[in-house]
Image 1 (cartoon, rainbow, N blue to C red):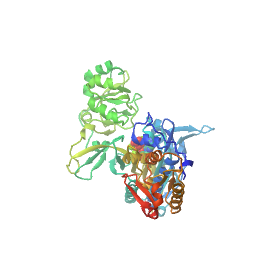
Image 2 (cartoon, rainbow, N blue to C red):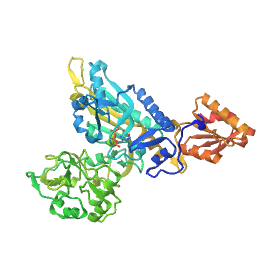
Image 3 (cartoon, rainbow, N blue to C red):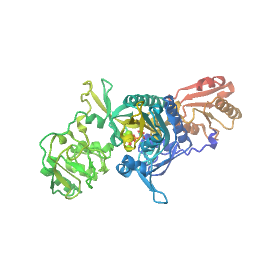
Image 4 (cartoon, rainbow, N blue to C red):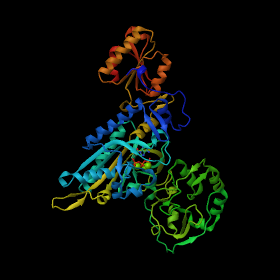
Length: 560
Ligand code: ATP
Ligand code: MG
Ligand code: MG
Ligand code: MG
């Protein structure tokens, strides 16, 4: 492609609302363009990178005999009602109606659709196992879209679903996907780690998240320095925690103030009730028990939780509020998620029976609540796992890091097949629910994670495998015929052997062109300057900045 014809709207300045490197560099290099909060359009360079990642995913999925299909993004409500998730999904799901008033959603994930597809076609054990996947747009009304394409309202996901006759089959399918994911992320140039995870809202017995270690990650991950133990923080904290078995009293309503201001908060924290309760909270509607400690799973929630001893419940907390109560500087400002769909409780809290629970609403507190009897959830104490703690597996030292979740694999078991009557008939003619697994990768988030691990002050350093182009050919002086002609020749020659090449044919100063080449991160540069009279060009590697004068006839060998 000729640079003069390319649509690469690069920016010289760092965009003000872009907080993290990958977001800044994607905007600066003209890969993506923001349309609205959480909505980004893919521009040519971005699209090429996302396609490269998709192609790698495709190759590795196909290598495991998975079948690519493509489903619609609009999904009829009936399917979700069958699985029980029409209600359960909550505000993250975009819902819409057609002209007749029939309900649909914009698919946030496709378990129901794939289960429905399989139940219609698969009858016998002979038809199994099957693994189906697609690379397709997902829609999620995220509470807080941010960090560019890391968390958006619509994104490309590769989602795969496996169908097996028994658990042994599911184990094999899961292992296949685990291996495929390991290869995919390695080929993308990502230093990543699979960690044990809880399966959250999707359900099922076992799951792993593929985490890219990065300071900008929204998740916390726990590693053992001695052995291969690795888990996300929720999982690490949830092990070995049993519900309390102390004497249980009757539920009783208590009068507590609405907590909205610093003064109210201080008062609330000073009551005996709050001490005994350690504050554990319901949603104001009394639906799900909500959590403070992890709230929105924001980086800052942990800081807040640490500062306040793991307990506080408010819609809004500001740095001042937290400081007023605890004296701690947290730098936190903004909403804390109150609508968490899982409960995260301090183990100490669970150990005491007869808690006070409530929402930050007047008269919305109840005494004598008991974990297990009155509410359930993921039990854990975020402070039960800390840097330097002992590994539950080998006793070695644990360390905690931040990570970006790029992929997630689940054993679903028969959760969906039972709810949706997706069965097969065995040799004896007996019917059984199909064993399922599901496996997701976020395409754009993977690209962002790659940038987080591959950049310098001048821009992106794409690994060759996902680079939008492999080589950029830069004639130094567009007025010099021999430079222009040779650059053109090299460009055509590289294209002809399948090396994806940009010819920077713009009439600009060389420094300007080099800056752009570095910003957009093309792995190799061929500079055609004055040495061309001796048949030589400069060959530059973006990764190391290494420069070398090489002969024209050696270019082909160098770029392969
Ligand atoms: P998160 O914990 O970050 O919200 P998730 O656990 O909800 O992600 P999954 O349902 O496991 O996500 O989806 C599979 C993959 O899709 C994730 O591992 C991630 O790579 C990607 N993904 C999920 N949500 C988004 C989003 N809002 N924007 C971009 N990619 C996303
Ligand atoms: Mg999510
Ligand atoms: Mg997650
Ligand atoms: Mg996930």
